[in-house]
Length: 340
Image 1 (cartoon, rainbow, N blue to C red):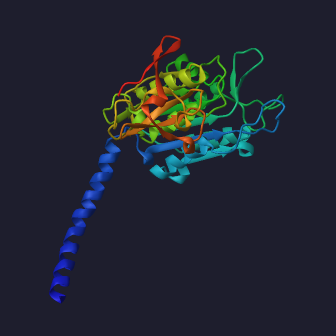
Image 2 (tube, rainbow, N blue to C red):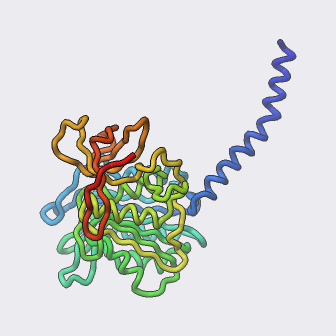
């Protein structure tokens, strides 16, 4: 017995270096499979769902905040705490947002990536020439955070090479307009919920798709090659916003920020139907109304769907006869029959 234990112990000790090498190799492989590294990524998130002047900016529900989920994702991926700033509601005054942003940018280094996200209200100046993201204390006497100043500060203080700008608000496409204006030292990509001149839904549709892309959800991998690229994510966002919210998102990129940038890996789709946008009669088909949804999984001839504008807890498995497909056409969606 002692001899057996001794031999097993020696075998385990000899296996430890091999196990360590395997873990390191796995970690390196994971890093190589997406085109961003947490240790070289700087994250700046502003989420305002309530304001000092509710007569000017109506509040949004605090439950199930997707901005908080986005921040939690980057933390879990290993973005260092000192490289991540999250300001929400009363924390996000204009002065504090601007000061925290320039402070973060000044700490970056060569080759770093910036990820910026805003959610809340967007509004325009009286002359319509400037777009602002509504900070907590934005009002008649205090301007919000302008999209122009965001790009200007990045150009001035950011020492890295790429900046991904995202926003879920009205007029958020102004970020794309700003990065297109002139040649910049920094290479930009911008992905937003609306165009520069369009209102945006109060639902989390845009941010949910952003999360799905970065977390590697299977349905976000449009072509099924196991990789979710920035251009795939932009296409997903565009079709989600058109299908579920009847609005047009915005996507732009400059310099060397390639639309083929891989943001996440994805598992193989269990069915060709996964990723399809459909209409569903929930509750076992007893409902008479059809609800917009997306197929996110498939098993045993049944499909798991997520309803746009609903919580993940409302996802359910449905039969094929509860589903009807919609096919994208210019400016409209056509109803068709589901085929396995």
